[in-house]
Image 1 (tube, one colour):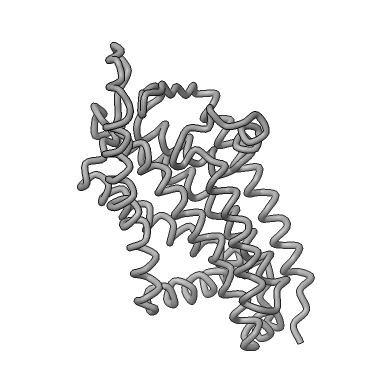
Image 2 (cartoon, one colour):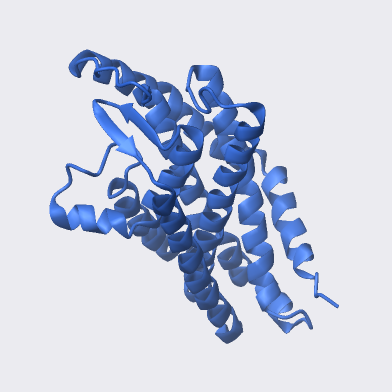
Length: 279
């Protein structure tokens, strides 16, 4: 019989998420503010600076707000999950983790429960940003039938789920090895900076210097954004004066990359929690 005791960990983390209203509201408002102020301001500037893109038959032309919205969804998922393991550090410092690891429950359930709650939070946030973006004028799912929109949503949520698990596992591994919130915050902030800027969240990576372009190719955030844009906008579209084309093999490679990355980080998190000693 399957061991479902990870659901206790999941329920506790979700209860905590909804109970702390300030944390909940700030995590939802931050991407909305980015999309509203930065997105609209940059869209206006790109419209002023760049000449109108030539209309190519069969190629969808989207504005910068639509291009950026996929990046904002991905970056929000990154920030939510890279800091998501903090609850383990909190439990360790307050003695609660000692009770959990001393219980008969397998330690792997701790990681599974935390990862599952990270996926749930990510899907809630992505849905809210998606709906808000559409209300703001983002042209996702242009010309798609209702069935194709549902399939596209499924693809987006699948990419987000795999990405969320991988970064929740990274965050958990860091939290279990740290003794202070300052150390945890320093390392996670240091990780997010290169992931964010060496990605295609806000701008294309084609103009990067060669070494940065190569780094963006192994950046999990880039592969998540590729998947979101493929399902939300299409396999061939133009934005900010450039043409973007994704083949099915490109998206399968991005998804496979994220799956392998998630498996590696999950294994590391399991080994970390098995070895943790709480006195």
